[in-house]
Amino acid sequence: MLVVGQGALGGNSGKCVLGVARQIAEKYGLITEGWNGFNILHTAAGRVGALDLGFVPENPKLDVMGILEATSTGELEVVFLFGADELDTSQLGKAFVIYQGHHGDIGASRADVILPGAAYTEKNATYVNTEGRVQRGSRAVFPPGEAREDWAIFRALSEVLGQTLPYNDINGVRRRMAEINPVFEHVDVVIPSPWADFGQNKKITSEKFITPISNFYTTDVISRNSETMAKCTKEIF
Figure 1 (cartoon, rainbow, N blue to C red):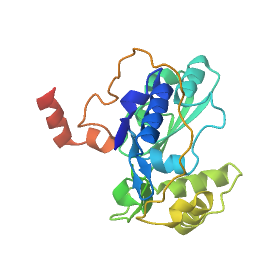
Figure 2 (cartoon, helix red, strand yellow):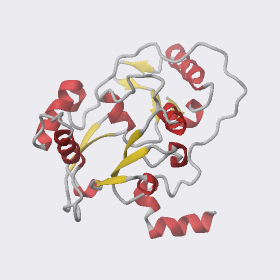
Figure 3 (spheres, rainbow, N blue to C red):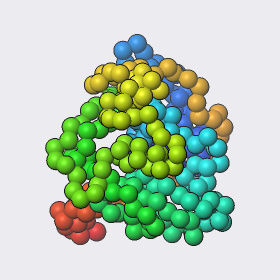
């Protein structure tokens, strides 16, 4: 089995490292029928599901770093942060920032407008784990105050913008997800992905790998608002 983390893929040679990892997997037969020995370990919990739904920029220059650069220069005037707290918001310049999320973290502190979303315990939601397995979570309690489930916020916002989305309940959203990618039709089942050519076949530089996690105890908005995790951080650091 080969597990590749974001610390290896985040540098200037990230695509080259990914290409070498693919070559290793192919040379030593890590991908066989019924067995997947090649794994990417993401730092963002929602990234696998987002990729399954095609959440990638139409303009390749407007990835996260591209957006930050465009806002710092004034090229982008409005930014919508959907639970995006793992970035340097000081680089957003004078952009008008809309933040949707919960627990009021880094992104909310920079926002001009906040759309209060629901935490995982407060909504019926679909998740995809690192393995690619689709999972469902059920609401345990209702969100407080004016907070709403994320899909409901997007539905209301689309109507205000004159681009009304045709989803009136969570089942409609899930049907659309399955239309985009059939993997969402199968709950708690791993659907094999086709093996493809990825990465770059170029020489890897001598750049050192750097861990993307500075504090294991505060890697998300909920843990950063936890007194217990704050005590753990204080004891370690």
